[in-house]
Image 1: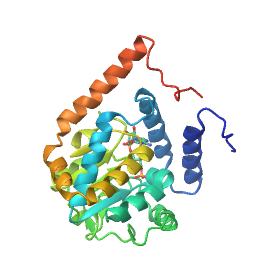
Image 2: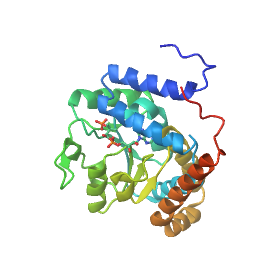
Image 3: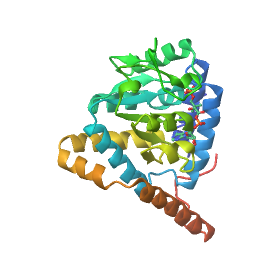
Image 4: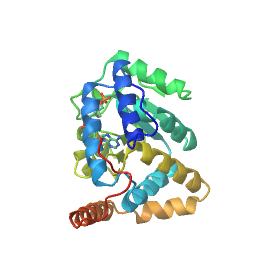
Length: 259
Ligand code: PTJ
């Protein structure tokens, strides 16, 4: 479908079209389309903008990533459809490995996602032929690579399911999630939950990564001072403020228009 550029919700509609096209290509699963709808609904509440607490978490995420000895970015179907290029750019900037890790895993899908990441500029993508398992996980998400997620000290897990986030934390890893739902098990389990939309969060983390690579003292300070509980409380306060404004007829941002 050709979406007119003048459409008030052009970007949002394009994201949907990209996901549907990726579903046709066997990259995204139908469950991924449902997950996206949930994300969109939550993003309306946030005003479809990065909140101040999300920005704080994105900076902390970048600090953990640049200080890591073995950082890995985990990519699933939705991430490959919406932000393959951004994930690859971030991996190169850190630098970090990329591993395809799927909840609805099939080897055909893993290979399709690897190809998509390679087309976006990735040089080495882990995913096919996993040689390790994440302990305590029954699902196929447990399949992983020794030189990837399995041995990582910091793992970025955008659009995750809670089980694996919890299992990775149990393994002693720093887990950075990107999930618009602050109440999800993923956001609750992650070391650094980034409550923001994926295609806004990754460029922000990239920008902070580039800055913090030049200022390692600041990266260390951020890691020392970041407090997850306080940050999530600030996310809830922000939502509370947004809803109160909306209830009083204020704060409907210009960009939020219903399709
Ligand atoms: O590709 P697979 O097989 O690994 O499957 C991917 C999905 C997304 C289907 C799988 O990981 C899954 O089932 O995830 P959940 O449990 O539905 O969680 C996805 C979370 O991401 C939900 O809390 C959504 O609100 C959130 N979300 C959806 N789209 C976005 C988002 N968060 C940030 N940005 C988005 N664009």
